[in-house]
Image (cartoon, rainbow, N blue to C red; front, side, top):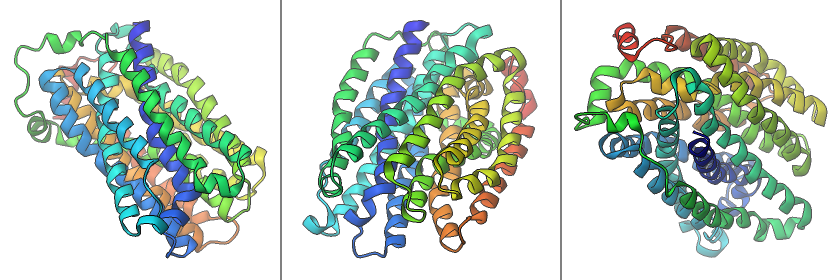
Length: 423
């Protein structure tokens, strides 16, 4: 289990590094470089639009790789998804800007971002299932939390590289070539991930399946459609919180409040480090008290904290901003620390890779793709404090709270009993 957990953590860290480095670049430099004919606001919105394409591609990736995972095993998914995401990320760093190749530049950016999302859509399901299906039932939450720590590690790594470059390069150097370095580094990280995953064993639960599903997506749509919609709605608040903190707030504070990139990246990274450290703590609590109670508590906390978080961000002062981000991410990790065990437990093994991944990534479309765009538009019409953003996030949290309330508990309920509740 330690070797499996370490390999899953490393793989998700690398894949999410690829995904997050694009979000940071979108907030800082992609608008002027790839949409120079737009106004500053329109350029930011367009950059966030290409950012959102990755989320739209993720459910498609979960269908594609979920089919592979349910038909041929969890392990092949980990290798192919890592290759796809790594190669497309390196390619983003090689795309010339608009002033070199014109409209082809944003089109290439859009296509490569789509491929990034496609690969990441398969990564989460494969990594979490391989760990969860090897873990003993009483510690499934703990071991399944290690892939969930990966996004925090990937984010800190991506933004740490950006922070170092931003602090050591001039503005002109950073804009001209410095922002590309983290994308090029993705190639070396992908090779490391492939080496770590080359000797992983196949999931014992998959090997026990007598007759794999012929068309997993068809079975999921026919038998589990309500469960997929509820999990997507429930998880949307987590995505909304995370990308408000890590992507939208970075653009808002640097462009509207005049806060330096270095200060913002430091505040965000510090909050994400704490979030990563608390992930296994939430998972252990989930093993002891159940998955659903933790999700309900975290979602309720998010409902109460969204408006204060926006108010603290609007101060532009490092400590209040950090505290606002920290409160939001503690609510986030209370939910998402147990998701690695909760979602697989909701689905029967023959369609688990497809069902869990589709529900997880549809939540990303609802909460992650739209939030930076909507928040940017709402903040543009606001004064010093963008209260509309807080109200919007509170609304998403209430939606998720209702969805979590309708989902069943899974610990220690067997899948057959869960299925009866959902049917």
